[in-house]
Length: 123
Image (cartoon, rainbow, N blue to C red; front, top):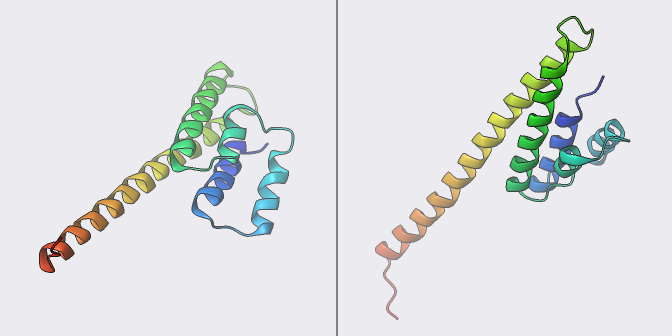
């Protein structure tokens, strides 16, 4: 049992944010061996937050379909539903990260405008 979506998301965020160490990356890559296809591969190789969001959404759809197709008495059912909840939670965290990034960009624009209002530059 493995949380491919979460490990792929970790790799993608390490790419986008430029964080993480070799041992963390190695662990995630080992977890994903043989599973790098479709949205999982897209997540693991994402180079932008927009790519992360797009591939995470696709992985979530796939996981929702997997849960919907399972029988409630399947021994993997509870774990798979847990994965679904974890991926939905991760999706909300990525949405918050995106909103915070936009807020920072807007704040920098406001700071720039304030600087020019305070110290006008004649052209």
